Image 1 (tube, one colour):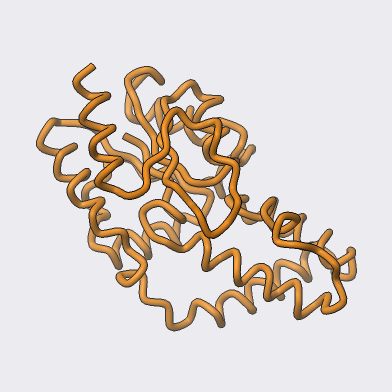
Image 2 (cartoon, rainbow, N blue to C red):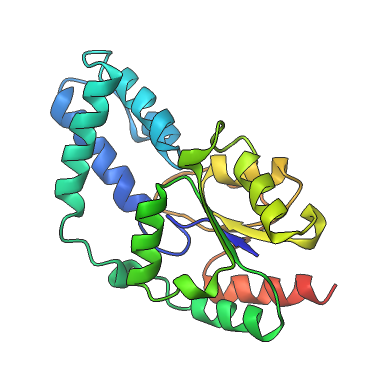
Length: 217
């Protein structure tokens, strides 16, 4: 099993979305963009995110300036964040089931490796995972399947032997482009297109039901 992190393991995707919108409002207060326009920010790698933010700021800042200012802005917002409070604790039922049935576990996230490890350690689940991959070291980000292909290779699994849980359009597309059966973790606060997923789960217990169903096929 392969898990995305933001928006799946921890409910940070919506928090990130609010930070990104606030950043754009601060540096481009007279913009006319809607939430629908901003949805393209969800699930992006940092490099792609900086490029999109630059466009939303009407190219008023260079990429380096966007990176510096957004990192400063988001670091301030995240300074006192409690990842335990955003942790979807019912994932523990899935992780324990996987270990009991000798299923390999991985994380494939567009976040930096440092951030991934920080979150997994804060939630006390890092040691469950056999493979942890960050998109920061890859040539292509989601929706390109590179991170999933790399993760499959490190797990020594074929795509049809694996299952992934994603929430964003880009993440779901990346997993499907890698040929992996994909469960979408339902997001109702943002109108994200999750229609490419094989199934959609409302919570981790529903994800566990699908895991049991697929593992017994």
